Amino acid sequence: MVFNSLAYAAFLPLAVVLCFLTPARRRWAVLLALSCLFYAWADPRLLLLLGADVAVGYGAGRALGALRRPAARRGVLAAGAAWLLGGLFLFKYLGFAARTLAGLLGLAGLAWKPPAFSLVLPLGISFYTFQSLGYLIDVYRGTLLPERHPGYYALFVCFFPQLVSGPIGRGGDLLPQLHAEHAPDPARFTAGLQRILAGLFKKVVIADFLAGYVDSVFDSLTNQGGLTLILAGVLYSFQLYCDFSGYTDMAAGSAQLFGIRLAENFQSPYFSRSIKEFWRRWHISLSRWFSEYLYIPLGGSRCPAPRHLANLLLTFLASGLWHGAAWNFVLWGLYHGLWLCLETFTLPRVEALQARLPAPTGRLLAAGRTLTTFAAATAGWVIFRVNSLADLGYFAANITRGLNPLRLMAYAGAMGFTPATLALAALLIGLLLAWDGCALRRGDPFAVLGRAGRWPRRAVYYLLALAVLAAACSRPFGATADFIYFQF
Image (tube, rainbow, N blue to C red; front, side):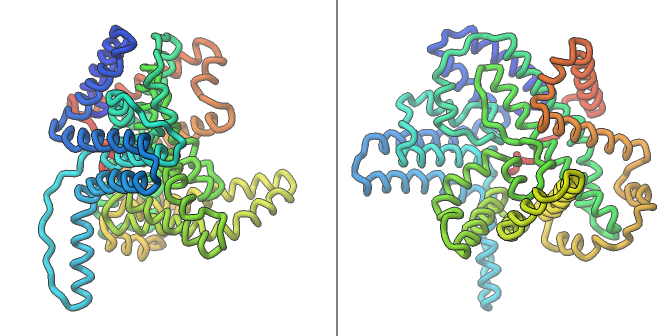
């Protein structure tokens, strides 16, 4: 079941009603049952691995809480982590590892044909594996008491708004909220529905509209001009952002209906002035996970410079591999790691220069930094999106071929755009940037609308809703587009 489906439109209000009709002490059971139904909607077999991971995580957490000998506690943590990461490796990386090994043996002159693996990647396995592993590490460190109630622990892992694509929750943040009693609150319901509407607009109206034009280039790179490639890369940046942040908005809004506040995952990332800042604003829960459980334990920045740079590279290589079992994801992680290594030396000097400049010049430099960061992130998204390394080579070789801005419409036409649809794409991206700019400078745009008066607020709500309905009606009845991060 996906957030942008008719099934979910029926499921969510029924889930809210059932939850609040149930006595508070039993709501965990209702929410857990609903979460299992949500996850098993397409394939009930998916519950087998999820249930096994829940059982191992709960048992390992209780054991860590009971044991006192350091060696025994390390053994339990290692066993729990081995189970969780072993399942992730088996379903996500085994085929990639076998193909890589076969390639290395081939370079050594040894022929080996890897067996064909037909394992289906369980939905959301990367997300709930990291959430479970983070919980075990927190209990091991003593920063979190183990959850004693198996039902609440299962709900912590399986809570349906964040199960499939995050945000990756922390036990210390989410478990107390699951235990708390939440009364129905009209103001909270309104805020949750507003956020769901904003997420639907991002996904259904913007991301799905751009997807067809972007795919027409990335899935058929033959004889594409440089300006077409650049335009496809830029549009993919916005498609991916609207797709994933739209999912996050719908997840956060859905959770808010039950009184649960999920971690924020995006904070206007395309207004960042450096790649370092970008990763503080993009997929925040994953960035925080890697920072707290990999980068800092490796030594972080409190070590000699060569080791600090190595820590950055290793962390982002792991981040790239987390996203997918393919070499382009590894290269994407390496690319961002190298950017951050470069910024380790250059960013303090640039910021010091900007602080010394007169205000108008400083603002120009800030704008230039924002555009440079967006261009760097977009180049990274091209690595992320390509279907093969050969396609990446085509991009690199042809990106400067035929760069004539006066022929923009001709190059956009190669993607399938007409003047009207290209203008619509520009309008939608402009609205998105205005929304994010408002969120960055003035706070929640819905709160800003609330201060503007009843009629402006209602006008925006109705326009968003009409746009979502119009976009949904333009597809075959019941058809939905999957979220990009479902593949991770």
